[in-house]
Amino acid sequence: MLSEQHIAKIEELKKRYPRPQPVILAALWMWQEEHGWISKEGIVEVARLLGLPEYHVYGVVSFYTMFNTRPVGRHKIEVCTNVSCMLRNSDRILDHIRTTLNVGTGETTPDGRFTLVEAECLGSCGTAPMMQVGDEYYENLDEAKVDAILSSLK
Amino acid sequence: MMMEPLILPPVPGLRSIDVYEAHGGYGMLRKALAMKPEEVTDEVKKSGLRGRGGACFPTGLKWTFMPKQTDKQKYLCINGDESEPGTFKDRQIFEFNPHLLIEGALIAAYAMGVGTVYLYIRGEYNRWIAMVQKALDEAYGRGYCGESILGSGFSTSITIHRGAGAYICGEESSLMNSIEGERGYPRVKPPFPAQFGLWGCPTTINNVETIANVPVILRLGWEAYSRIGHPKHPGPILVGVSGHVNKPGVFELPTGVLLTEIIEKYAGGVTGNKKIKAVIPGGSSTMILRGEAIEGVTMDAEGLKAAGSSVGTAGMIVMDEDTDLVRVLTRIAGFYHHESCGQCTPCREGTGWMHKILKRFETGAATMADLNLLLEVANNIEGNTICALGDAAAWPVQSMIKRFPEEFAKRVMPTAPQGGGAAGASARGATESASAVGATSGTTLSPAHS
Image 1 (cartoon, chains in turn purple, brown):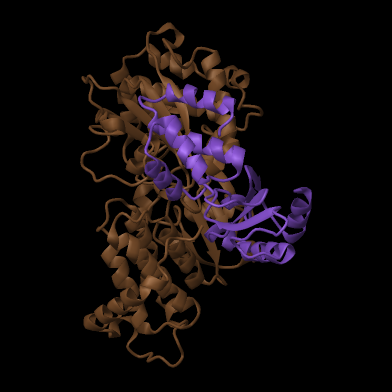
Image 2 (cartoon, chains in turn yellow, red):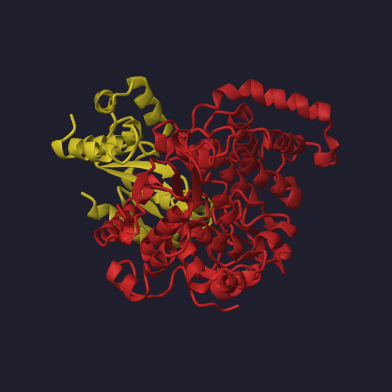
């Protein structure tokens, strides 16, 4: 289920478009914000709220990389490894996180605290290397900075 | 070449509407509302402004494609999907001057008679979405947005539409599908958006930076604006510099500025005073240039075309003499493989094949015949897809092979025959290898990893 506030927000957003379907991404964002990932239950709920077939919602979910289709850790760490970051040693950052957390990319720590993934360009090319955790951008990274950030994320 | 910054002036707190108004903000909206809509379009047309999203299409001309007489709702989509590797300019506008963008959107909407504006911002930029939303709320609060703006009788709404992670949604027809709540597949053109856009209605799609230039044009007047920078591609341009430079960042410069000047004067020169091996001038889709070939080349559509590349998003990536370009290209190819929407076979399959062949070069398992094969795959993608992602994937590969053949030559298997080189492999040989790749690709061309 989605919270009352989010359902009210969905109703508000529907007024911004000539039909309910465009609210699909916003509704999925709300579900992910509440539940951490888009489960089958989430797909069914969004489909119901917008009057769409479930297969359509599933098709949209699977098209976009930011929707988690499996449970993830409390903090999803996304390390950009695209060219501008690569030229400024994003590999070292990624390796350092892998070693520190003892996880591979795409994996979650056993305590459910972190999920580590590689990301495509996140628009921080001038402040590379970088990683995104939740909505937060951490830029101009080095190993010491990464250590401090990881220990601050409980 | 010095110029007072017009898009990102160094005014503290400009993000707040009070500061923005104190510096003349929303004055150009008032000015526009006192003009006829077609006069506004004409002003933009005469200014010479060309789109800043990559295609450099004349903005005013694009606006004239919108039908004047229509029973249908008209739409303006502002493209802030900003996902081209090496590009981080729209983000600066969201953060430092969101009201300029909003004012530009309102003026553009007025000029085209648009009642609904969607500002599409990539999902990862949630922090910046919050900044723009705050500015938007302020603009609504002061009557700049919504019903009968400033008592003019003209009404338009602006809604931020958050993406969810898909490079392809920066392609204009894909962006419209994404707004409609579909999967972000590009559409076949024609019909063009001005005839058949959002929900089949007349729609114009402009880049964030393009729209931010509109109030500047009205403020300076088209004549003064058209004198900034290169006459055929005038105005200020936000140039992003990343990679091996001392001071990476976004610099607002007049078009026509020398690439060497951008690197030396603004980006602080190459790290460690090394030589430049290569420059990607406008985001990863644009053709790569040799370091020695950037002498005298200017940052504008004409200058970069003459140099064998394009402006793209003006996101320059600078690579020093020690850069492993095969690795760089492999990474770029991996990106396009990941981002291909899968709709067109040449792109869906070809981007994966290119990535796979390049992996062989990266690991030293390639032969010179692979180079021919790589080029053939790229040539078969280019021009054979619905949208420009196919071309964007092919160009870096084609230009790298053409301009840096030695980078590949030194990465082939030591046991492989070296004499023939790329030109040595026959067309038949290349075809055979292509089918060999196809036959084995099933195991590796699984849906892209995230």
